[in-house]
Length: 201
Image 1 (cartoon, rainbow, N blue to C red):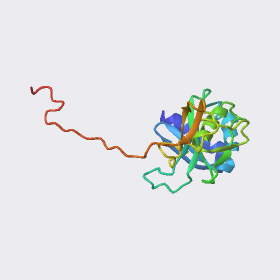
Image 2 (cartoon, one colour):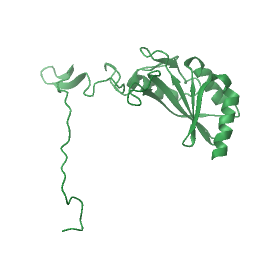
Image 3 (cartoon, rainbow, N blue to C red):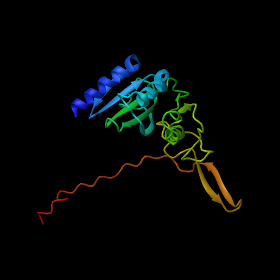
Image 4 (cartoon, one colour):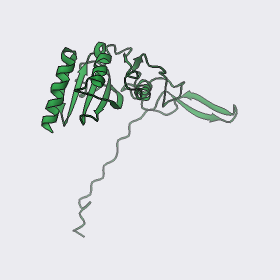
């Protein structure tokens, strides 16, 4: 396993060169971080280079790093992370790119390289607000088109911002401000001396 990872690491360094911000082998996988300006070119190289041949995009997701490491994180807030598979070489790589602007997170779309990135990127947009430049149909995919905000962001309120209900007078579904009071529930801990000790009865 180590020799395969070492070979992949060498191939990545040869093909990508100075476009690599960091390359980290851990837990049997390699994570490559690149700048947003190089993201599309790097993805194309990962797909087209015969020494890499990452023909399949297995997953793409968004991440909000704003509270990462108990607030110790000092890097960019939003990242798009792609998981790629090379069936030809039987290896995987994780590609991570940070959006350069936290207020308007924007990176290139990968739909021109891996068409199945379409729905993954729509999900990252819907849940995290990450924009994908050049995406053919970037719109919400899991929430309502009229939904306000992006629910997987760390600063999104747990109870949401609006709720919907059926109004019998208007005979339709309406939206209204959330009526649930925010509260924190601390569970009561019950400790018994003999709890779980089946041998002493």
